[in-house]
Structure formats: C-alpha cells, structure tokens
Length: 561
Image (cartoon, rainbow, N blue to C red; front, side, top):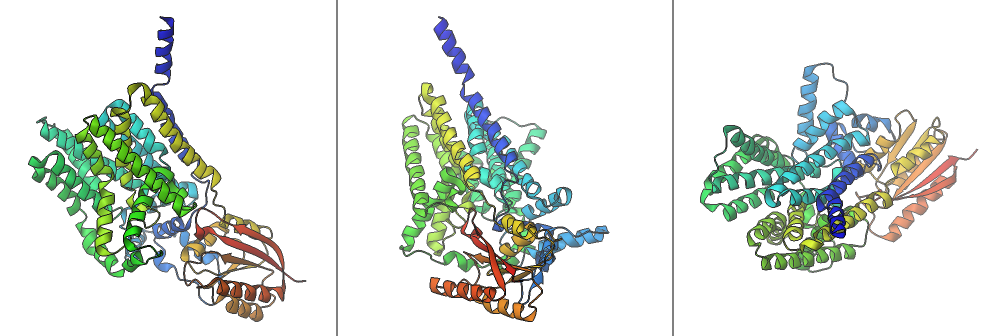
C-alpha cells in the first residue's frame, strides 16, 4: 500500500506537465542570458542599418581611406527636431527596402521603433525578437491544447521553447522569430473557426471578432514579415479543404481578407523589389551533383537543421547535416506508421499538412523553376515548418507511445534539444570584431589604419559597430585584388600618419573573391612585403565565429621607430 502511494507521489512529482514547465522556464532563461553573449553576425548588423533608415546613406568604401566613425553614425537614428523629420525617416526607411532588399517592411519597422526606445545594443536589438518568441510559446500552448489537451499543449510548448533552431532565431535580429508567431496564431485561429463551424457552436460577437481578427491580422503580418509566408497561406487553404470543405468559401474569405490588407504594400513596394531583386543567385550551383540530388539534399538538410541540429549546421561538416536530416525523415516515417496503426489518421494528416507540406511545396517549386531556394540560408527560409513538425512529435508521444513510457520518452527528446541548444551557445562563440576593438584599445589615442581585404557591407558595419567612434581609426577597405596596391599608395603618400596598422585578412571576403589559393597567397605576400618596410609585426590573432564570414586573421603592425 505504502509502495503504491510512494510510486504515485513520485509520478506526480515527475509528471510530464511539471517536467515540461521546467524546460519552458529553461528556454526563457537561455534567451535572457544569451541576449548579448555573441556579437552581431553579418545579417544582424545589416538589419540594424536598415532599421535606422540610413541604408540609402551608406556608400561602399572608395579607393581612399575613410574615418570609420562615419559608418558608425549610420548605425543609430539621427536626432529629429520635428514630426516632419520623423515622418521623413520612416519614408526613407521604406524606400531603402526597395533597392534590392528582398523582404517586406514590418520587421524593420518594428525594430526601428524598438531602437528608438531602447537603443542599438546587442541585448536591446535582440530583446524584441525574444519577446516575439515568448509570445509564440504562449500561442503554441493554445494551439497544442486545442489539438491535444493541456498536457499535449504544454509539451508542445516545451519543444518549441528549447528547439535549437528556434532558440537561435529568437536571439537573431532577423525576421524569423516573429514569422513563427504568425504561423502559430494563424493556425490556431483557423482550426478554432473550423471546429466552431463544423460543430455548429455559435460564437458570441466578441469571440467572432477575436478569432477572425487573430486569423486575418496574423496572415497580413506574416506576409508583410516574410514573403515565403505565402507557402503557409497555401497550407492553410489546403487545411480548410481537408477539414471543412463544405464551408470553404467562408474560410476562404477570411484568408483572402488577410491577403487584401497587404495590397497597398504589394503595389507600392513588392513590385519594385521584384524588379531590383537578384533572383538568379538561387540558381547558382555550388555542387557537382546532379540537380535532382541537390534538390533532395536541400530537403534533407533543411528538415535536419530546422528540427534537430539547429544553427550547428553553419559550423559542422555538410555531410553530418544531411545525415541529421535523414535521421529526422526516418523518425517521422516511423512516427507516421505508428500513429496510422493507432487510428490517429485525421490528426496525423493535419500535422503532416502543417509540418511537411510546406517543404514539399518548396521542393516542387524549385524543381519546376530550376532554382535552389529550399536550402538557401541553412534552411531558415523554411522555419515555418518548425511548429507543424513539433506537433507531429507531440502527437506521437501523446497518442502512440505507451503511457508508462510517455514521460521518459518526452523527457529524453527534451534533453536532446536542451543539450544541442546549450552546446550551441556555450561551445560556439562569436568574438571577432570585439577582438579587433581590443587591439585598437591597446593604444586608443594613436591613429590606427585598418586595412581590410573586404568591401562587404556586413564586414564594414560590424567594424564600425564594435570600435568606439571616439578612437582615431581610419578604414581602408578594398577588394582582395586591390588592397596591396592601395595600401602601398596610402603609406607612400602619408608615411608618418599611422602609428599602427591592423591588417584584417578575411577568409571569406564575399565580394570579388580571388579565384585560386595561389592568387590569395600572392596578394598576402605583397601586403606583408609592403608593411615590413616601415612597420614591425607585433601580434597575430586568428579570429573565427559561427560562419565562414567570421573568419579573419588580424595582424597588428607598429611603425618602426
């Protein structure tokens, strides 16, 4: 009797609900403690530049050195003296998105207003997306509870809270964290409206306005956050046809209203963006594999990155990324057969539509158009699949796993996610341009020339962000083939101006890269020879982060006495 009582108390103490709550709390804590743990990566500092409204004021470095602080000024909002100045800043921001930036405006506008209140520190800029991700976690509980009940809802929330890929994007100044929020809210609202229509449960006026409002606003916000939310709109339409075909027109009007609200931006902004966009970059093959194999490799890589390994995909061997995707695919096939045998056909098809259909749609479009968008950006363009795939995992645990093993299996899955997530932020630091700033700070009053073999605007702006504008730092930023010649000319023209030179040698200059390793070595030897005539090498630092774009070697030279 006492043993049974003790066992029941132990089970209650370690119930799935309580364990899930612990992991949800850990997910929130991980977000808070890592707000400023990494420096901005390439795209984040571009988000900052766009959010200030100063992108059109940015000019690529020319042949002559330029004061670095001129770029620093572009990374904050100028002081405005009137409402007219404020309106002009907003209009300038919107216009800056038309010249090749392939994203709609809501993310940058929201960051702009957040920037006004909280400044441009790493923690401040990332905190808005962190709040969006916590809101997504709240929405995921509502969606999960609607489908599975309280326990399934809280387990689904725990999965999302420590999902490695979503955790990374919750701390990334890009548009993917709010995108997942709009996916979750639109799905929850549509399923609620479908259920109320099918069951003939009449909604009160407030309920009708609330759920229709959530659906319409989330669709509009989704489309104005990321254009590939259009895939999710197709998913919602197919969900209507599967679950409530008889009332397709009623639901279709709701979906259509959300689309119609985006028309002003589409006519004014999207059409101009399409004319200026570089669509051809998606067709560039970087593999010798046949195109069809690349398509399916992109499929595996995308699902592996989004559902298992997260942002580790940017650092590990691509073969491991593909293997992780194959593991997820095999697991999902096993889950599906198991659930089918258990008679959970409708819910299985529902979560399949929500989780995997967007991938198949994107794959089909890529094959037809002969493009390779699915694997672009390490799978982040398909982050919309994360909630649906996590719903599939939740459905399997709730409906297919034996009850006596459910808590253990669920805890095991959560521990795998937690281990990957903690490992990501504890083992993969990003301390590149902060390190360059440390070199400058050794003698902050001496005029320092930074010679960098990259004109990529992400590199230039990261330098400008991390090196204090009060330091007398001059930037010579050139394409790899031109740096040696221009540096020699600068030193000959003003031989006594620079007490120190920091040569930043990028491992991935991004723009106008040299074609062969021999060319790279030749240019490096030229620069070393030029510097050795008047300067002495004092320190060398090998710098790396989470991407090849972070790879630099910093050489600190002091002028000979």
